[in-house]
Image (spheres, rainbow, N blue to C red):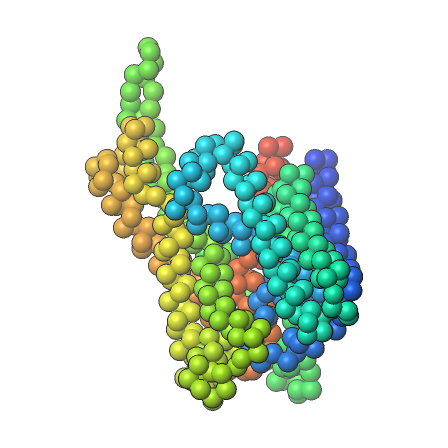
Length: 438
């Protein structure tokens, strides 16, 4: 690995891209410390500490603490992520968007432009809700129209600025710009989370207990990382044979290829969707100041909060975990169904004279791909569920007070592996040995 890094920095282009990416990440971390003018920075810290659930921990982890600090990038890249998901889902309902998606590079540019506009609109809506809703309760030092407009402008500009940085990293850096911005936010919280675990399970314990606790925590983290890497790299290859045909005076075709179907076809999207749906009612009730008390609605809200799952003292609330797992599996199938069309693949294969050995072209091929896809999606969803449930078990049984969970780990490992692959592909052009082959 060290030799590969050394070789990578010998290539001027790669060295410049890595340094550019690093400088952009430094800019992001500096921006996370710049406060929005006219706000009380301690307001969110005190308000956040008063919350009994973990509804906002997920959001704060994605913003790298910017939301808690109420910096100019408090909204961070989350409006862009939401916008991207909305546009992808709308391609099913709006034929014009679906046509754009299939229209090559020109269509891709139009889709990116639409995503940018939706991102700005979402940023304005979210910043307005924060400035007006929380401004009356103490977020603004002086609640007036000028300060409200200032906060809305600053937060919207901060979100647009991060979107711009992400695109520049994709263009001039190592690629995966938006994903890298999100990853650096999550990584910035790791030292504090690890120190919390250290204080809770190791400090003050005798040597034997501390060593056992440290080894257990390390083993859990390593096993989860390995499982995520296996999930992201696991592929089911479907062999495809192309028939020979005459073009002019030449005989072409006759070669064989593979259709690589990833086991984790939907990536981290099912987890994000499931977490968002589970936390949405909790967030709304928190903003309205309603906790339900001991009523049936109060118990439902507690069941939706992951901070109450897997607790031996209150096992009834773990029903929420079962609902969460069902959501993950459902969205794994749902998201794959809108991003991979077996019928379209089968038709394209048939037009090009390709077929799967032992399977007739056309609908039989489509049915075969659907059957294989349903099988591997379930395996991928189970893997995602295991990665996400382990932190909940650890937190519920041992009382670990951390916001870093399976979703964050999946994002970090996925982005790091994908970024290394992109650097590797650039190095292989220059006959260098890659990261992943060491």
